[in-house]
Length: 253
Image (cartoon, rainbow, N blue to C red; front, side, top):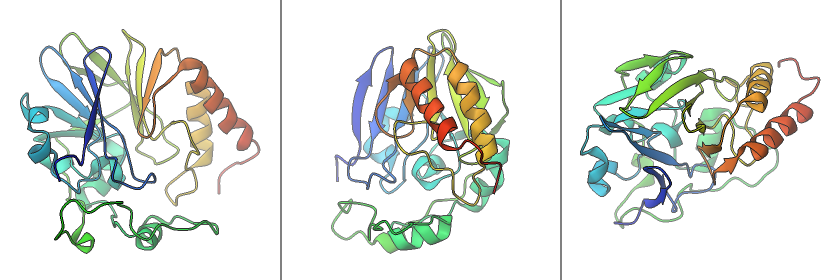
């Protein structure tokens, strides 16, 4: 299938890449940023279809893949990149290969998701990438990091520098990237415009609350999230405030 990925040019040399044939639960954004010295790709999708085969231009400048956290819909294509960076806390899980399945019930079991009576999709892709594709063969390749990131680290692309923010809660190794010059925040699954998942076995509500208190005060111009559409600072404050109200009085599991 030649249109597994869709590309949208946003302002300032940034491309949003999506996987429209994937169930909304796992349909994540990849962000491709051009620097004067090199490119980076923030998150690498589900890995069902080869990025290198379908978007060869992505690899022309040997980009650094930065993984915002160790979940299948963000790291599935990471093995295709020569250089891969993520937070130190995500490294062990990435090295062993993150839990992965395209079958709803099996993935919920692997990740420890409680469906709470909601219907679980049988298959998490709406279309097969090609007629002979067997979803049972899907897995995420183990990934060895070439760079381990910590809070405050800087990634310099030439005329574009990103600062690593360690923002745990959804997972212990969640990061966001802030381009301080423009106020653009790449937030991964730390925050997006939707229900934020904080009840996985690895999630931690008190950490997530500290993350939201930080984000509510952060001066940003736009947030490019791991899922869904981008939004402005007012919406970020609204989402952070909503989370803090919803979880008031929760002090761990």
